[in-house]
Image (tube, one colour):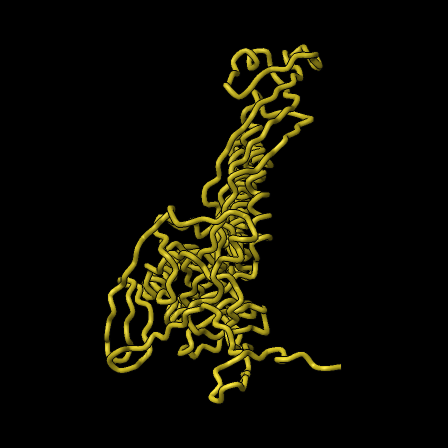
Length: 436
């Protein structure tokens, strides 16, 4: 069998001899990714992003390059859910980066090539492996730049670690020594319109039925289930329509962060979105998404479905209902892939690792804190003493037929109730601090 000519992987090239065809290996195709090297034009040192004004600063000679930023805010381009839009999206980071893979928590973090970090920012482990960052992930189109400075993080942490009496006294030392890692975290934003029609049996009073009326709501009275007519209540069929538009619902693209802490840290202002440029990542860490678009969209749909259901139920004339049904349609669906700034720190107290986050835009802090359970126990025991004292005095007075003993008994009962409320509230707050 004769082999085809030219062989696979070869292309024709120019020949120096007339009549002779020459072939060469096919050159590698350009992948279209622009790679940027952030070097100082004065001393060739590495430059890094500056939170002061968003420019690039050389840590060796002090050279500063002013920022060139165009704020697009909530008008940042969004994409429809089509195969074509995903295929047209750029890949990679736009600059050469390396990846830090943690063997403890499996987190993947990308770093600038000049960074020498050997610690996982998510769990604090040193069991990490460095590789070249993959370039086959979607490139973010927009981001919110860092505004909060590292020194502000330490001050906020110091205040945060002393705002509760349940914390260990020696915890303040950690506030001064804790190292914060500025890192860009991946997020997806989603827009969608939800249109729903609903129907349910609502438990009404006659007065409430006469009072309630909305444009999207109507009575259906083919029959009435007259249950408990003595109190004027009955089950009535009601129905209505809801039309909601959800704008910029944010879903985390990272599985390494606590959703509880992200909620405590509160929202970002997407009015500060700017087009993505590799400059913003110079000297900083970033994480590529490990929650893909399909998974994030399913989570967003679940939240939108719950919000729409709540809006439907709010249209009903009463909160007590049964046989609720809802037909829901989604339209005008779109998405963005963005990066949001976050300061991340991990610290070890005793044999446990705790995580602290600070919003790199607003400075809001959230995190996990150890509880001094011994201190909590002694405080609860001391708080119980007044109730115990009143009870003993009441018992002695009543045993000697003193009428005032009843008053002390009443004080003992009130003190006991106050103590129980204090115990429940204290344990709730302590559990929230430790398990956030």
